[in-house]
Amino acid sequence: MYLSPVGYSTQAICFEGGIFEIELDFVHHQLHIKCSNTETQHLPLQTSSVADFYKALFEKLVASGIDVKIHGKPNEMEPAIPFASNIATSTYDPNATNLLWKAMIKSNGVFNKFRSGFIGKSSPVHLFWGAFDLAVTRFSGRPEPLHQGGVPNMPLDVMQEAYSHEVSSAGFWPGSNDSPVAVYYAYAYPVNEAYAKQKVLPEQAFYSPEMGEFFLKYEDVQSASDPDKILMDFLQTTYEAAANTSNWDRKELER
Image: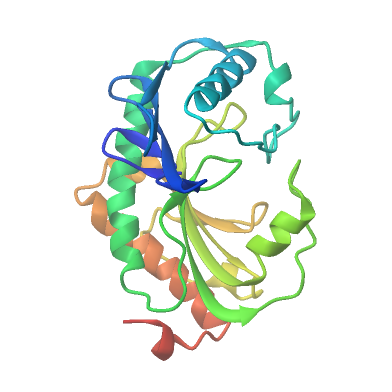
């Protein structure tokens, strides 16, 4: 998904000669299904079970003439309860969702500015699967050996496709129940042993040997006199750490 003016959006998806879009609206707290050949369908965002939300969403899709099948289980988490079977009540907090969206909008602007300086292959700024982090990835263009997998409930062929080529990736992760600290992160794959020893900015940034990534706490960015600058410094210096230690052809890849 991608940032939209009111929340998150799939953007346009092709389907049987038309297009449709699913948008999570965190201003009016609704899900919208916009379709090129039918009226827009709406679904309220509210406290319910995952199973009830999943059922209602697919009923709305069918009502729009959209008959699709998906992998009906979450990725990158334990336990991976199938959506249709997850009957526990989940709380929807309108204020929290709106604040998270606003934080991601701020991050999205800096990420896109950072992305514009790279003329090699780069991902769009997007919400990654599983961990729900806003991410942007740069590719050196060099292929890598098959990824060995190991991510909970993530098909091996998906991981091998995602990491088929050398990358330097960064993003914003809002935290979880187990680790309730929002952070910016950066990592390289494959990683050179010298990567962890590189000097990065700002001074609050640090390397985690356990995770194999650089981190910068969201609160350090939020409280800075120039948040955009220290976030850009983090993105740029962690990229340089990856590119320099892995000998990327920077003259051909950067603008």
